[in-house]
Length: 303
Length: 302
Image (cartoon, rainbow over all chains, first blue to last red; front, side, top):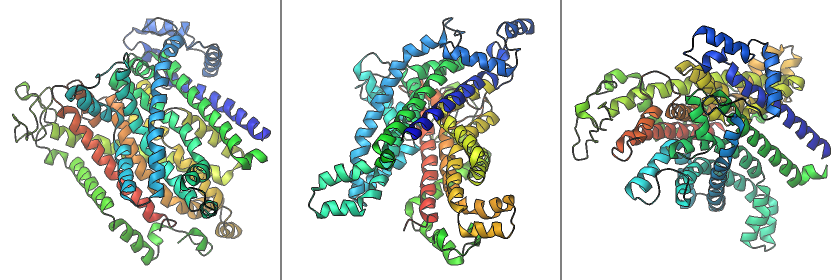
């Protein structure tokens, strides 16, 4: 078990190195970062900026510098806000995380019971309805779902605010929108992993010895639907990606909206800081999930 | 029919399936009403995209301030020659949706082609060579999986400058890892099989073993995955266009239409609603076909 943990830690470090390389590449992939930053400036200004920002150094040297700065939390100053980029991203992070966690909670709260029910009552009306919702949900563009919800609940019924993040009511539509993107996938996974275990011998044995159906489902079957943990981890990345769009639709002041705005203004320090931090969160969540998996799975734990 | 029951050296290629097998796959597909509906919708979308100049009632770019915000034909004030209404500058929404199908389909198909080439090649190498190559490739997969895919695509499209080619390449290069993982897993299992052993014993080169014996056996999963990825790529292209880093041209795309319609959602709901329905229907159609394809091609599903 210890070697497994050690191996995971090594992988964490390697993946983080890869993540920083990709983040570095965002600015350098076009070949000329300065042209990207100041597309309209005269060549003389560009040349001096290139020199002062060290863009004439070999890429390896630049990358080393980037990583050193990154370790100190220095992503450079935002061109637009004229402030260090990292604090700007960090101060918007709680909003994005809250939105993501709310959406995750919502989609789990819907997906787990309905997924279980449709696995138990396979081919029932509920199962068919759930399958239909899964298809519909995976085929809808998140941003369009959001706009349709705005149209219905904010414009027509006037029940909820169109956008913003100040009141509790304003959280409802963004959270529901984001959840609608991740719920169908979760539901499908809950259903299929339940179907896999529900007819196994040990579940039948539990039933045969008189364990109540409810306990069979919760204790014997659900616990073994382990992939759910891994999937919840992967879902986190999907949700953070969806949060970028959802925040834009509802004008939620989170990291996603900041990044999208920064991309339009070609404000690359913010883009790099934002992309790196979101990836860092995904990596850490997945690492935590891996650890949890090692801990939860007796086959690995015993070894 | 499972791979295990095959005679050694026998390779499953769709075209080589015994007549009975092939017709069974086809029967399973054709018996399912949802799959038929999906295939029909898909045919209509493809036909509309290909024949756009002939089937679109109007020029998708032509503006007319006199006709702006014409509602759909069934509402009061609707005009039968603009069945789905017009937008804020009087352009025909139906024609724009028909033209928009072109971008969606081209990006969807081409991005998947890019992903396939990269993903399948790396998967074959990873599973066949194992060892260090495998470790490096799987690390790259892990890194790719760490980024929210859309965010990465957004950043790179912005950095490279929005264009059709950029979108295709970036979406292709952010979506390949699924093929690598599945192909690798299948190759790892297949390479222990007798028929691969036999091929190697008979002196088949590694190249021949990979291309002739391993690759064809991964086809059914690849077909299913790539069908479903077309659907995702269409959604992602729409999201990129919606966020304003689209194809960079004035040709209408569904995502861009929704973005424009968002600003007028309280006065003219049809601007954002219909392009979204177009996305929903096309993606749903592809998903339905892809899902039934999986059931039909997977020997384990009854």
